[in-house]
Length: 64
Image (cartoon, rainbow, N blue to C red; front, side):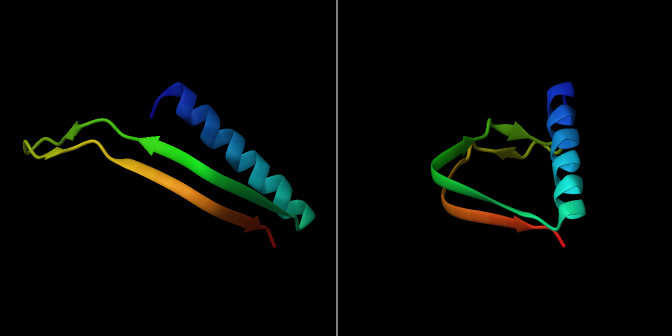
């Protein structure tokens, strides 16, 4: 995991902790959000081609 990825994970953990303390919820609305991966090869020589994932819809996180 890169330093930048660790920073995002830490930030997300802090946000979720604060939401839990306040019994709050947050909704993310996605319209055509696209993630693309690179080609990945494992140590056995298996290659996984690039993948594109597109998200449309809502995700609600409710902390109890």
